[in-house]
Length: 115
Length: 111
Image (cartoon, rainbow over all chains, first blue to last red):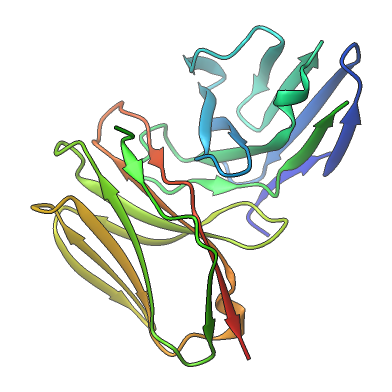
């Protein structure tokens, strides 16, 4: 185990549903990330949080709403998603937000299907 | 032109083969080069980390960076079925610039 836990592992939702993805890290890290991994596409950075403050929003549509109540927990709230949002959503953490100095620790992801 | 190009494969080799995985990149400002390994139904995990040019060896794995050609490689010697995974290259400039990932190459090592 990497020390980063994501729930649920799988999620199927309709386009009008509201759901949330949860991530928890037990590593004492200060930075947390949401990535999207679609088939045949590179990993896409969505959001970065450093000490609970959002430091990056990579032009993500507002139907994705992140929340970081503390340095150990990260949520991604989902609302009126589109079928093209179906993907593996990965949470990651690192000691600080400079990815060249500290390696990223990823969770196992939530496989999301939007019907 | 995409920042990082990586052939998605799939690549299938027999056990014991030498595997070569590659990425090319377009921005000469990139200085940090990483390889992540992702097993099925798992998140990526860092495998190799290299700064600037040169080689780095760790057991059966060797990472090479050729900045003049903007080309990075990962070699796996004596490949094992347990090496079957998707390998992603990741590159960064440093500072506040984000990590840029390749699409990943799916490798299968057949016993």
